[in-house]
Image (cartoon, rainbow, N blue to C red; front, top):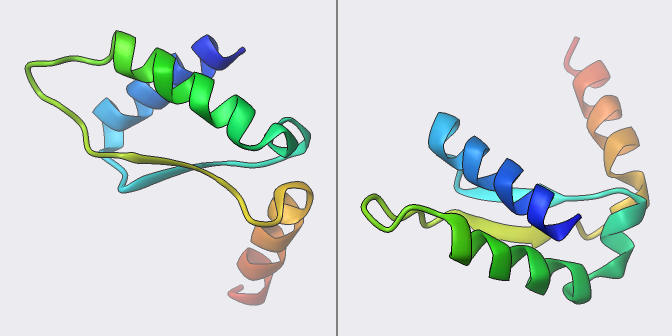
Length: 77
């Protein structure tokens, strides 16, 4: 799974050049155990010609991130 998330992160990095990619949800409860594997696979697969300085991170409120984002979006409407 970490390899798939690394490939996803690389693809997102190349398409929209974000400053940070935040992982959330139940799987993110694995914390650094998951994040360190994602970073390892990311480093193995990413381009070396055009390096990316995207930061990979785990959300502070892993299980509630979707609800918080939806609430913020709804409050702006």
